Structure formats: structure tokens, C-alpha cells
Length: 185
Image (cartoon, rainbow, N blue to C red; front, top):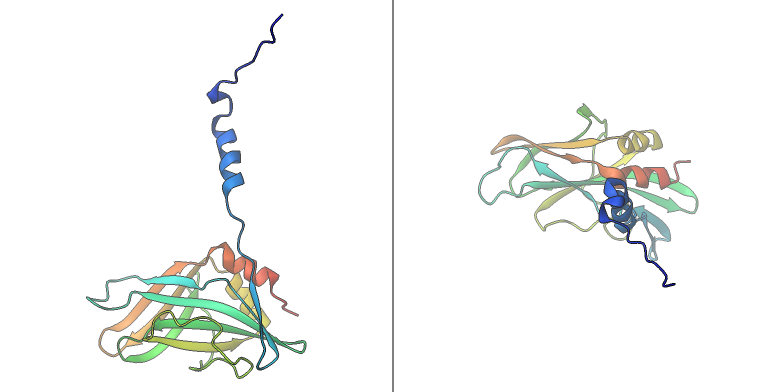
């Protein structure tokens, strides 16, 4: 007697089967990038790529509509320091800012500096464009945890020629994964 083959109808898998198949194809989140700065002996831990924010209003022809934000951690012989990097368009003269918002509430950062920490011999993140205005803020572990819990981020910059410009975007799971994996003491 010949062996009978059973054909499974394509509808048998349905939406659940399709979800399982698609889930198997999803790429896992990228782990935090860790790099040893050979010149200073400091370990730098950073996100694989910064969070991109977009201007909420059109800034005019030729104006850069993107800002970027990302945390990083330095470890120098067991001493951890926490930082936020914000790059906003410097294509026009900046009067004030940047200010960072987490789910609509201002996140206190203090005064930023234009150069990365002396613990590093190079920038923790590549400058997005040559005209970007980079600011670095040293923060504490509590502020980094707060930042990591954000779902929606905003950066506000006041330009002399156009007034206040807001850049917004979703924080994404990469930020939460980074903060969860960071050594917060």
C-alpha cells in the first residue's frame, strides 16, 4: 500500500504562524559598543548608533533638520563616568541650548562643554555633519537611568535667526538596552 502524504493547507498556520516566522527573521538589538582608548587607557561604552531626532517644523531651504543624542560611559581603572552627547545643527548661529526633554519634561543637564572628556582621545560618536554643534554633558547614574526610561526625546535649540527650534524622536529600545547593560555602580 503506498504511503499517503498529508498536505497541510496554507491557512493552517494563520496569523500566529506568520508572526512566529517573521519573529524568527527579526534581528536582535545591537549590543553596546565597547572600545579601549589606547592613548588614555579608558574604556568607552557607547550605543551602536545615536538616536536621531527631526525638527518639528520646517526650518527653511538648506537648513539641517536633524539633531542627535546618545549616552556614553567611560571606565578608567574602575572609575565610571556617565555622559550625554547632543549634536544639533550649527548651520546657523546658536543663541542658547541645547535643552533635553524626556517624555515632555526637561532633564536637568547643567552646562555642557564643546569637547569630549579628557578621558578620551577622540569623540565618542562621529560628528554627523561638519557644521553640527556638539555638546557633552557629564551626568550621574540617576540621570542616566531617567534618560534610559524615556520613550520620546526632544532637544530644543534657540537660534538667533529663527528662534526656538525643537527636534523630536522616539528613544527606541536601543536606549533602554544600553542603560540596562551599562555599569551604573
